[in-house]
Image 1 (cartoon, rainbow, N blue to C red):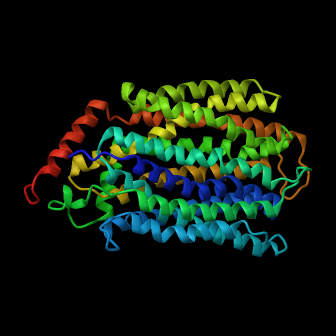
Image 2: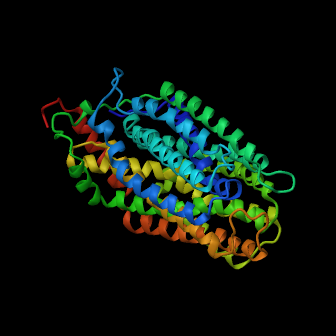
Length: 461
């Protein structure tokens, strides 16, 4: 039986990523500037924190992500929504507290405060985002519907970029381009409240349609994380998506933390960064309409490959030819990033196919664990990218707490910001183009096979 999603499911799934991204994008993009400019914490310390936090994520991600596969809680019969309901509260609180102005505290106290809250944030976001991501695989088994959910999720994250994130540069800088602590905290209040609201809409509007009993209960073995992990490491398409997603984190850093430094120190227009959000609106609208059609005609994999190839050409040109006008740079950079927009829109549909492929091979379904293994690669990518960026800042001339930076730092940070997307594209092409190997024909075979299995009476497998 094909389970097709309704509009309210798509809107609800959009709300889930919008709510999570309010906190996730705000912290990931701006905690480094808050810690270095406002609190005066050394960038090298932040690099170490980012790396340690991701190592800790590597330990707790599979534990937290496997919980829906191990235990069904609540009376609704849902596997994933109850866990989102629990995790969304500490996630909101961690965002609120981490941007509190504790600059008057001692250096040791500030570093401890930021470190503890950053770790709590990471665990809470894992607790909410992993069941949210895995939930798509039990909302529908229809390829077109999964593309719609993937698109809705992508629009959620990008929607935060063109709405909430556009406010950030306007509120965290004073007229003289000095940082404003109260602006960071006000935005944290908005992000925390918004996360609770939009996660609630997700829980109300989205429906988990595919229950474990529909297809694999009779043959499902007693849960074993190591058994699932063994299957995951031999799941070639999943490995491909893990590598590609790891690479995409470099682009996120370039357009996030590094961009904030570049607009302030190279272009001397920190508030102008807001304009990039508005420039992204027509790109989002274009991709919203065109991407499903391209995916239907060429397949999600080929659509991603074509878009990323265009992205890498544009990024190389930005490296070779500096653009002195900030608004012209924004326009060219926005066009270049269409490739990343399309990658984000379609990646979740491919990940859902990887989960189906695992069930196709083993007749066992462990969506939460598989998704946690996949997201681990994203966090490793974030760790490598964010730690590398933070560690390189002092090497290219940044001085934490200084009111003014050397002119050479602006030039260096521009090169780093436009160069990282090239690395990102290369890794994405390797993951999706060389390793991921589910063709449209194979995807249809998997879908039909799983549909036949689920139609059989329990015990007949």
